[in-house]
Figure 1 (spheres, rainbow, N blue to C red):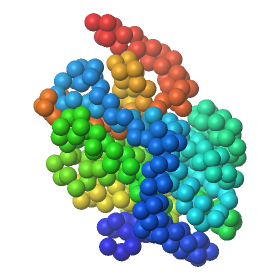
Figure 2: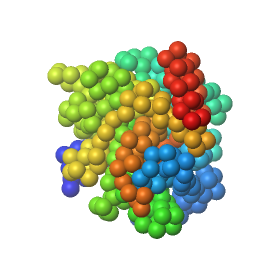
Figure 3: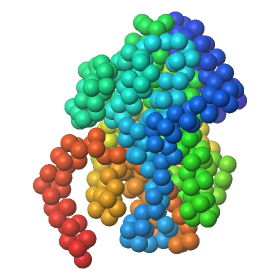
Length: 408
């Protein structure tokens, strides 16, 4: 396989001015991978600072409700800063320290990557700037508050659709202007090589943990593993624990938004609505028009509101190793409400997409089987979005109906 490619996807399409920066990053990362002491330092840091290993919770009430397979939830919401994002960010912080750089920048959609990056910068003593779409700044205000309190400068991006893709564009512009002193902390398994490999390498800690946990709890491997897919970092994290186990089906869930035929969604692969393209430094399937212009996307979950998808996941999907599905905003709100009431667990809106598909399919499997849902983050950050949805008159009636159903 050509370096930086996963089948037909990936690569490093970067301006010439950044070639030396990428050469240095590749060298430092390759040296870290060869050094067993680096991975030990990383695991120890995640244990002492970020509460790893995160638990695997058996959702007994939901399992009884749906019948069929036992439902387990991998609790990345209990990771420090409230999501899986810390796994990658703390690892990249160790790389930045090796490179001797003093400033980090990042893009963020849901804000969890921004909070994690700002936290890492505070711990390691780096200057930090976070780029965030202006629309996401408004709908993820709690995370913006914490980024600023952690010492980061948050820059609202007002170009384009004012969401994640536009934040990534602005972060790359900053990097080109400040490459000698600055490292770009890419938040997902996208972008030019070696970023997809770097992020996947650090996120594999999820899959390594959960594989042992399900064997200890259930006595055998799960039948299916579910994860939401925006860029794809949490999905790649948990999927890597089972890639070699072909009897374990891996299911990615994209943002169906207002429906796959509505034109207001962010489903690249499940909706068969994307086409091959090169943007933001790499080749993958993008939501674009016939002229190659990126289309606007929509999701109730800011972290899934993105035009592209990891080249690694695109390759796995093309091979048939990962099955891609989509969940609509309405389905997500229903699954979120159900999980809160039945288990006392509050998933992030992104994570709730995975819950939707798992709930649809749990009953198809016998009781002897297990499924795992990767809860990539907790829903604290989404409180305003969720409250707004539940205060809508149609949602008020939905909640009343669910309350009657639960009481029965």
